[in-house]
Amino acid sequence: MLNKNTGGWILFISLLIAFLLTALPLPHWADDWRPAWVAMVLIYWCMALPERIGIGIAWCMGLLLDVQQGALLGQNALGLALIAYFVIQIHKRFRLFPLVQQSCLVGFIIIFYLLISSWVTGIMGIPPKTWTYWMPAISSMVLWPWLFVILRDIRRQYNVT
Image 1 (tube, rainbow, N blue to C red):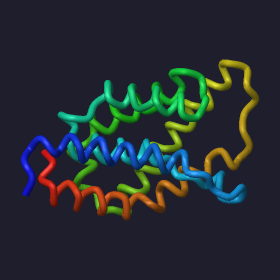
Image 2 (image 1 turned 45 degrees about the vertical axis):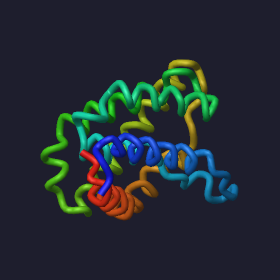
Image 3 (image 1 turned 180 degrees about the vertical axis):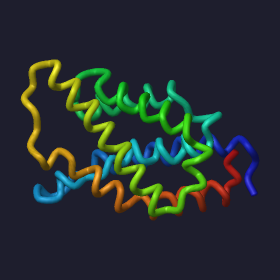
């Protein structure tokens, strides 16, 4: 087993991989289905370790995501901070849900995240997106059980507390 200090590295590496998966080029037909990787990893760590991953880290991750995607500065930061707040508030109940219920809740959380992002762009006068804008919620919901199991096993293997 590794010492307790490595837990921070596991968190950092998982968030870095989420950012890389977000930046990974996809074929044009699959681009609309790109899961919200950063939001999903944030949801997991806020649920598993609410005392270590909080609103401040979510805000910083959102700012980095804004820079990476060329979005309005603060757009993703606001959405991720609200996600972190919500998940931290319900983390004890969220942990007890079966994976199917967790997937549905993650889908609704991602829809809320996309709604916040759409609201911010709407305030700026950018016209609303097409219905394909909501597809990341579906793909995130489908991939959640696998992401949950992988991150849980990594957390247990490296004793991240």
